[in-house]
Image (tube, rainbow, N blue to C red; front, side, top):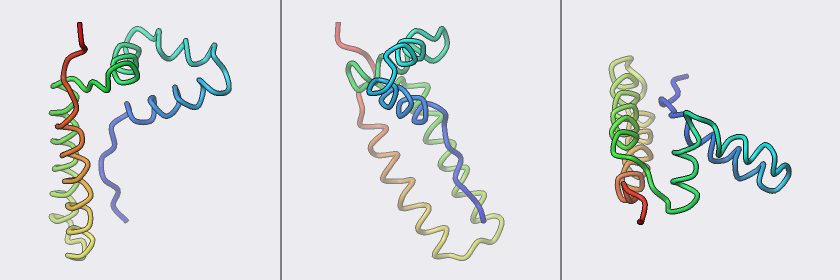
Length: 101
């Protein structure tokens, strides 16, 4: 079974959301993390996804679909994966790239 390539940030966003309800200390720890904190804060405050993150997300999803096709997965699997990834890519690309001033 082949799985599409998944970026890390969605899991961090879910963790930050869950911790905001259960542990404010862990939520603050994620939001203040030197590497991941800015992306999480930008998403939570303004729904922002950086251009670099958008680019990597779309490329990773495309590579996942391409790999499934190359490995000879059944056409319905590749088509389903392509449709889902296309819908996710449309959502990701439609998000703002910069926070409001």
